[in-house]
Length: 480
Image (cartoon, rainbow, N blue to C red; front, side, top):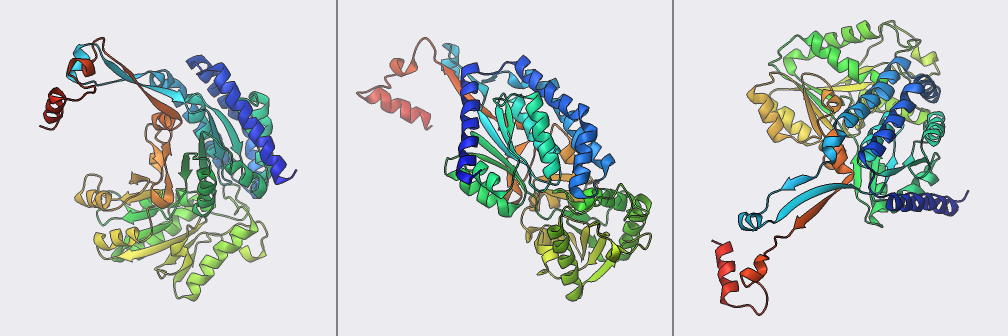
């Protein structure tokens, strides 16, 4: 199908969804709960098939990790939304000035559906990052169209099939396909568009959305730092376990993965050994380990190898962590051993680009001012991680002098799992936030409703033409 025909087909689907939304009116609580229940059932009843499709797309994807991150986490998010939906849907009363309030004026905000929301999902967590926005979109009473990633074709096709079985085309429709599908999809006049992926692609998506003034939510990434304080409330082994657990999950192909460490000079060697030990404990073998995921494709594998080789050529110390001493050069499964890159130069790609893989730069610092200055040179990240005293002045200094989408103290990415916190980036790491109540609001129109009092103050105080002295006295009173 040509790009023009494809765009026309998707536009017809958008028009059908919009027509159905207008014809049916604002969906009630029961309709929304029914849609959320169907979405949760889709995940729970097809866990095995969805995880196996991901394993086939990656070449090797940890089934256990996928079951948690792609199935259990989204189901928990759906359950949270269902639990709180009735309260979220209530109108919010707002304050009115004293005199009109005494005369009977009232104001409220009604949260109403936007209409049809587009979702462009990424390849790294294709189920989770489709279902998470869909949860908030459906909770807010909208319809949705989804463009999944072409890098996970088996999973995308399966998700399209499962959604088509559970939902009518007027509720949710999925459009798998490559670049031409994504390009046509981004140009549609949605009521809102959600994109998760790379900042370089987000720029094109935002330009396309601008043609129809479509508001966007962009969940991007960036270089999420880890600050290791001298004031650690626990030992380095615990810190290293937290870092390695998340960094090696999905082989580092996570937007929230630690992208570099900032560690006091005197703790560097001790921390390196703690990181080595943490890898050995959790991943004693790598090549044939079903818990360790492969890099998604050859292009990304070559990119990561290039980062590593460029840093080494420029003089950085590269420490490969390979607990079983396996021969990765003879493997064709696109698995890559984790590597620490010690004090790479500022101009190296590994410090300029989001890594999205099992490479971890480690930079030393002398004082927290130096660490903060380095973070602020990198652009605002999606997350910032601080390991130190939770109630200390140093943490408050870090929070006050840096910006990031979210922060977790003394762990990695825990803020993203708290359903009552908004999740999103700032600046180059994204715009807009969703999850939980913020997600419901993100995909709702906050409609202001004002009910005038029986006695209209404009008449009572001479606020209509022809303007005179009484009009001027009101102006003067307002400015006192």
